[in-house]
Image (cartoon, rainbow, N blue to C red; front, side, top):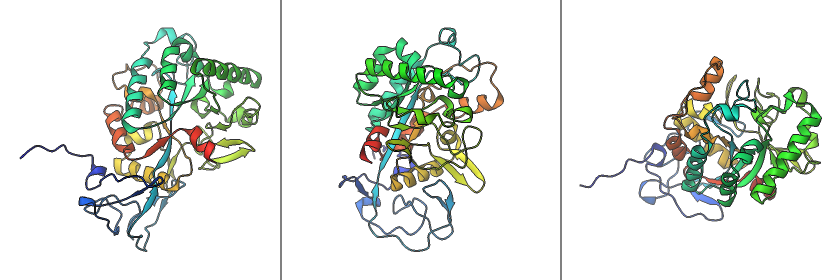
Length: 347
């Protein structure tokens, strides 16, 4: 008997089928179609909706009670998920001394290594993503930025530096966006129409600064989060128009009763695989444009540990890094991963 490679849990009993206009068919072992009868993956393949006793995340991330009616025998699904990466080095946190300009010379540069791993992951997944890039890193690594753009990815602006928006006055922030956008466009050779503020910082004193984005040449923002502390829980949880010609694309949030967790960063690194996968399936089924968020440094588990961090920063920055690249490959397998620009253009 030969040895067979053990498949990730969500791929057992499921065979990839040809696309038909972006839709997929779920099939069980042997390629036969089956009527889903419950919510757990099993002998009849991956099932997205639950039986009577189970709850799943809805499109807003909340857990819904089980669905009692049977599903169609053949389920056609959108498999599209916008994918984004925040292009920053492992030490670029939004707290001193790591957010200061001198930090770029003080700490080891690991961005090329992490970028190569992220590009490899995207290639393995057949993904076209949006990379939100920092101007200060683009100046230091212009060839690396061109490599990202040359691989077919879209370039967005993450800021001229990794300083939070509300820590600047409005005029300085506007100037940093103008300069950062021009720099990235010059180096990449492509238009930059998307913006994501460091640490989701269009909040507080900067809460209404998004109004300046159309004038500065942006078509969408991805800086406003429906979470407390780093955002506002009252904000919409799915993409919406901020103004004519300007979309807001918030990152995904998972709701379970009063608990809300980010479906990016440390969230998917610590949550159960099946829960994260189910949430991603729901997002893909909805096809509402909610972008996934990754950081290249999350694929670099060998990075040094930063001294002097708060307990919260130590946890969110360092938890679950080991093996995360492999986990991401399994979590994102089978989705059509696109840029945020592609979603906005289709609206």
